[in-house]
Length: 365
Image (cartoon, rainbow, N blue to C red; front, side, top):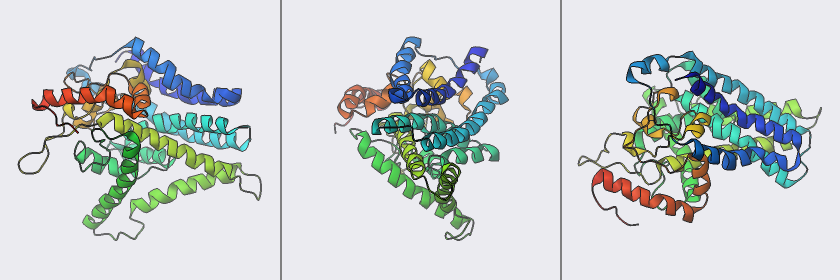
């Protein structure tokens, strides 16, 4: 990739900087990151258009090993930790005077920790490096969603586009119903996967070997640390844990919105022996919009990611044969929050995909 594309991946830090600027400006300026993400970015994303270029096969191995791309994700981990401490400090100043300012600040904050932070955690969590997996867990700790490390890798990537996957949205299922299943059933599945791992390792479930215990405890410890650091002596500033858990809920809700968009209605064909066909680039919605892919470390090239999960973000390919989203994720997230509009935009595209892939008329719900 050329120098401009490399520099483009630093754009993710802009949302965090806008959150700080909005807070310091006060009042309605706390909504600045929200306005930028869901109004300004979609406009420029549309004007910039698609980037369908792929790294030449002869260069993939070289580009994949460039430390520059890993450095950006490593840097993000430290940025997000510092950002959480700044957020707790900001809350401790009691300068958010109205409920609307609180809501604007928390959602803006979650755009950073969830919209981008979980995206980075997702990228790092797929890698074999112990350091990258550790960094992934650290980021997920800051949004109370550490079980995602288990469920996403051992569950979602195995069962995606099947009824067994809680993170695959069904046809005509609205986001709010999907959120309940993906959050709660996904958590239950993470427990099942961890129990199975411990059984194979001949280790007891009720022990320190169980990651799910640590995944529940560590966010609490981190929250307690933030509260202790920024509370007055011998007092508890309860606004800090309220802030921490509120931004966590909004953060993983953004993740679930992305899950909803990425896999809406896609179903893999079931084979005569009961198994499902192998995951390939046809089984996830793809979006190769240039600007939003910079902000999201090419997560929108999701078709290639599911076909080749270990590939690093900088070498993910655009597949023309994949089902294509009409807009980048910032726009699609807004549409997903309005079910009638979402169904109007997406159902005919889903039916076209079914006709193309299976040469049959899709069943009407």
